[in-house]
Every structure is written in structure tokens, then in C-alpha cells.
Image 1 (cartoon, rainbow, N blue to C red):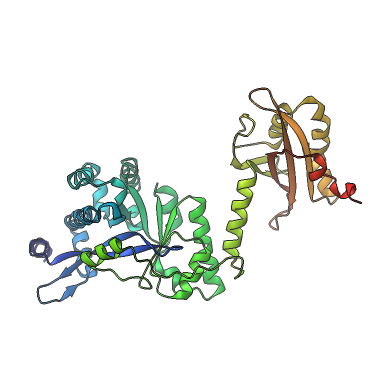
Image 2 (cartoon, helix red, strand yellow):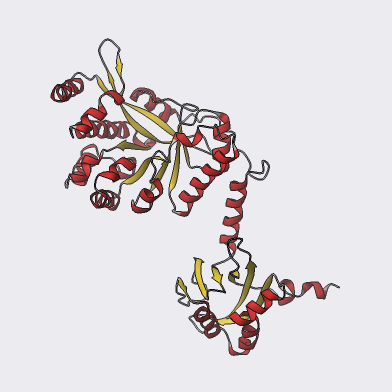
Length: 409
């Protein structure tokens, strides 16, 4: 049966019964096609369509699915070539058996060279089930693909139980969020919070996001408040034959996207996202501190005075480093304000923040005015004293920033 299936597949290729359809991926904000997923279809002469679910699993079982995968990627290369300067990235699913092929990247490179297209227009999609086969082998395979210059997407994220561990291990570029997250049509609070968490997870890992299975306006509106990159689903387009896809790309006709303003609809994730971006733009150095545990971790670091600051360490060591960076005339003020002992005392007095402006010396020996800002934070999970510390250069008078309430009384 398996042997006859493979023979039938080969015959289907020769008879042009095996075809590649393309499901467009639309820019979630602009409504323009930014990519596509290549999907195989077996269409017999009488018009009967055999869905991939009826033959791909059998081919995978006997480790013969690669013949279909390579057929699909070659068809995708032809489509990219036909699009010319209107080309978009087309992603192709590759099964785990390819991880055992040491010549996989060479074969992919050969196809790219044959059709004289850019690597950026062909993407490789893998699923969590690939990872279950041989963890180290798959990681090496994906690493080689990415280092060769191809985009790697993790498909169907959320359909498996260990998805987060999978994403953590795999050096991918794109996270494709499974349609199962949209099952409640984004109408329940629990569903919305779960989806928001997935997007936050992806953003923190600097992964582009594609949401699969988008079918309703309600889903689209909420997804856009989560800052999705691309949308794939029947709301915009079902998978279409090659000629239809070429027409859609060449005509560049955008679909209508009703983008929700996160500040108008009270969408929590969108507001938090905008707030975080604003904070990151303002402060070159952001540090999380646990005063009780005498530790710190740098959340964001730009070298604004040319000093080398370790990513993590004890607060006392970080405090000494700030002292050494600052002019001596400010040392007493820094000790009164920012020694760990005095910060804990300020917290006990009920203060919410401690702020000072000092001069620090940059790598060239020049004095730079720097604001040191510590804000106390409460963690409901324990009684430790936390601080979020911001450091940034200032170019205005002290009274503009500190003590202005006294000046204008």
C-alpha cells in the first residue's frame, strides 16, 4: 500500500495532478500581502480533490514525504521567480526526516541558484512534532538553515503541550500562532489574556508573528491590539492556485483592515506595548533590583557614558561602579540616596522614589550630567523590596526636574 501510494504520488507529479496552492499572509496593519504559505493539493483529472491529510501522514510514516516537500519548494521557487520585483516570502513545510539529511542546505541553495532568486523569499516551516524525534539533530538542522540565510518559522504554536520549551530551544525567526487560540472568537477574558500572553512571549523573544485561522472581524480587531505582524486565514483569503496568487500579488490590491486604536478601546496589551516602547526610547539604562537579595538584572543597556556594566550581579557591586563613574563631589549625595542601606530606609519611611542628578565621566574624560532614578515596586508574591532603576543623560536645569514644586510655591 505504501509503495503504491508513493508510485501514485510520483505519477500525480508527472500528470500535474499534484499542485501547490498559496494562502496569503497579510500585513495586519496595512492589509497588503507580505508572504504566503505553500500548501500541496492532489487534484485528480475528474476534479476530485484528495486533501493532504489523506496522504501526507502515510508518506511521513514510511519516511517518503521528502519527495513532496522538494516538489513544493521547487514550485514555490518558480512562483517567486514569476513575481519578479513583486516577490514575497513563501514558506514551505518540511518534515522532520529532513533533519537527517546532511545535504539539506546544499539542496536548498542549489534550487535558489537554479531559479536565480533571493534566499529571503523562501522560508522553512517546522512543527513541534519535528522536535520530538531527535532534539539535538533538529536544533542542528534549524541552526544550519538559519545560518545559511533562510527564515525559519515555527508552525502551529500552541497545538502541543510543550510549545514554550520548543520555542526556547529552536533558533527560529517567526512564530505562527495556531488557530486554536481563536476558538472562542476572542470574546472571553480568559481567551484574550491567553492570546495576549503569547504575543508578549513572542515580542520578548524578538520573533515576528503570523496568526493562522483568522476568520472573523472580531478576531482581527483583537489580534491587531496585540501587535500582530501578519494574518493568515479565510477572513482575507483561502489557499488559492498559483495564477490567482500571482494576480493578487502583482495587482497589490490591499484588503480593508479596521485597525483598532489601543488608546480608544482600552485594549490592555496595546497600551502596555506603547508604554514600554516609550520607556525604552527615553532611558538608555533600565535595571531591575532586589534590594533584599542584594541583586540586580539589566533590562535594557545602551553604553551612554562608555562604561562597561555587567548584565547581572550584586547591587553593592553595581553601586560601587556608579560611584566610580561619578565625580567625587557627588559621592556623598550618591551614598545618602543610593546605598543599599539608605534605600531600604527610604522605603521604610514610605518614600516611593529616590532621584538625583550627578556628573559622571565618559570614556573621553568629559563630565556628563546623568539622572539616577530609583522607583520602589511592590511584589505581591513576597515581602522583598524591589526597585526599578533608570539612568539617562540630562541637558536641563536641576529645578526643571527636581524640587520644582518648591520653586513655584
